[in-house]
Amino acid sequence: MLTIHQQTTARRFIGLGAAIVALLAGGCEWSSGGAEATETELAVAQTATTAAADALPSAGWPAEINGPIQWLHTDVSGWAQTASLSASVGGGTINMPYSKARVWPAMDGLNANPWVIVNLNGQWYAATFEWFRFGQTAKPMSVLSGGGHIKVAPLSGWRPRSGERIGLMVSGLARTTMRNVKERSNVVMVTWP
Image (tube, rainbow, N blue to C red; front, side, top):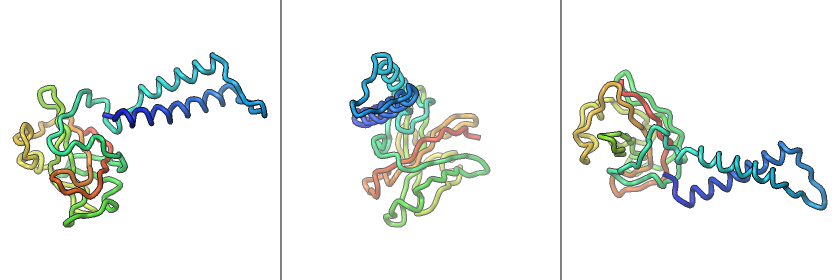
């Protein structure tokens, strides 16, 4: 979820964009005397701003994640979303190529944690399930299907079922108290094969 500050900032940027679009659509005229918007133009800009703000994704959270998330490791929801992730599962591998794999600094050879976001009995849970070394972007499917890698209840014994939708994400080091960056990727929903 976005913090109040992030929501306010996003709305300001969207509002500015909507105002520019409204002015351009209305044939914006600039003069030394300035330009005054009519009530209709202001209403259009406000409507566009409100609609755009309501349509904002929650800082990289897919609409499919439709409730609060319980964080089983560090809550990284407020960390800046600086990395772009594309993810897939198949052929025995969880592929999570992300744009910061060779950017985030390594600590003891490690620079990221992969996350899984699971809906268990109507509650969303997020947990790290492994470590990524500098430049690493994949793990064997067995780290989730074999269980035991999350190590925190209620997901410590969870195993994905074929057809189950899960979210995948990558963050800077968050599994313990060791930190390198307080940044994360977007969340990608995948279907377990």
